[in-house]
Structures are given as structure tokens and as C-alpha cells.
Image (tube, rainbow, N blue to C red; front, side, top):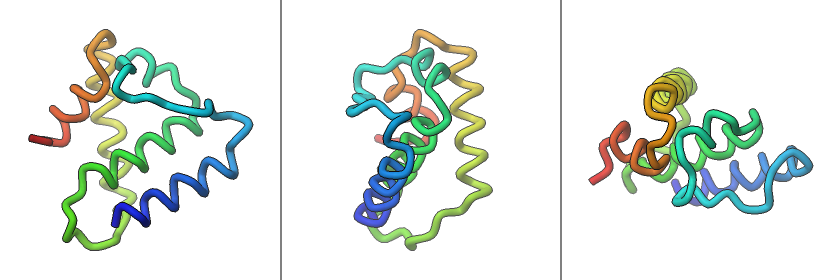
Length: 97
């Protein structure tokens, strides 16, 4: 599953390479940085997060409705907490222990 998500992320990077930074270190990002990211960066980040928070035995399915809902929830949280650490926000929203 993680290989599939990584492949999708790499493909997305290839198509949008001029618009993306070379590295996105999410451990240093705040919600404010996520909010100011361009559309291509948000797509890559959300695809990576989707794979990161899935369980090993989850089916290899991208639920686009859930994907959009998750993106909205994260955007709403970040709007209310712009100085929060981005990974902390995702851990809270996606229930990572």
C-alpha cells in the first residue's frame, strides 16, 4: 500500500515538478505553511498522508470522497490553529498513536 502511494506521489512530482519544492519536511511545517502551499504541494502532501495513516492491511483504494473530506477537515483545523505544528495536527485529526 505504501509503495502504491509513494508511486502516485512520485508521479505527481514528475508532472508538477516546476511548481514543487525539492523537499517538503512536514516535521518542520506549521498549519500556516500548509495553508499557503500551492495546489500541487497540497496534492502531494495529502497523497502522502493518505498512505502514511493507512493500516498495512487496508485495501489499495483511494476513496476520493474521504480524501476530499480529510483535506477539508485539515484545512479547517489549520485555519483555526495556524501556528500549530502540521504533523501534530494530522496526528490529532487522523488518530495516529
